[in-house]
Image (cartoon, rainbow, N blue to C red; front, side):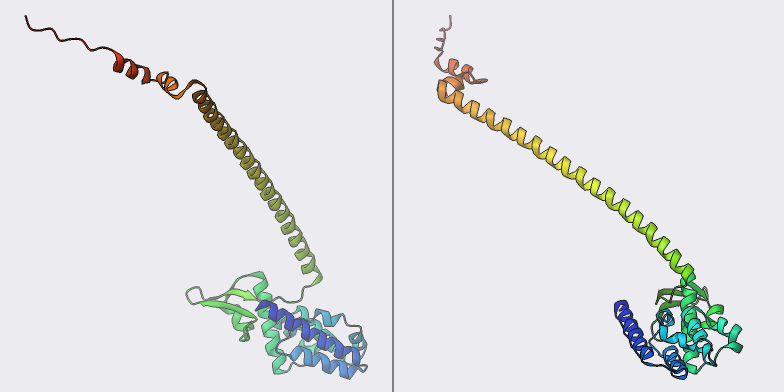
Length: 245
């Protein structure tokens, strides 16, 4: 599911990038920004911000469209309200999209969203945020949220977090490899001891068999514990019973 959403995002970004490269006038580029920020399935905009074609909006009467695109990449509905005088008016689809993006921003910082916050921001029904409402605590518990574009500071923090995770994973992998190596060594030692024991048993069997073959079976048995006494009892003459006086 997540992979399909990411693939769809990549496809839409490639589509809008190709369209922007083919446009030359500021009004056309502003219309493209409007289309992208209104698209119901597009939630990533930082790559569009880096397109050389969109730099043509700078210094024109459509420059606010570039600011609007930046808002959709990093901002929230409250950010728009604070700067609405400098930005184009939003269409209903854009308002809905910005509310959805605002919820994603909230979900980045906490997995428990109070109702009071959601009443201002929430208008999500297409699956970019999933969770459950806790009626007792009057909050929305986030279980899944799509990722938003990262600011430079967020990207730095993410790189540091991933680097720490990679270091921890490397240490854990090294420890596991050491334990596997120790287990293999102990297994070889046990196999060696078992082989030595079996060899000694086999040698003892061969020695006994050779001794029997050399001295004869009866002689060998007579020298075994208890066998000689049995043989002597068998050949010893019996005493006559004396008649009663």
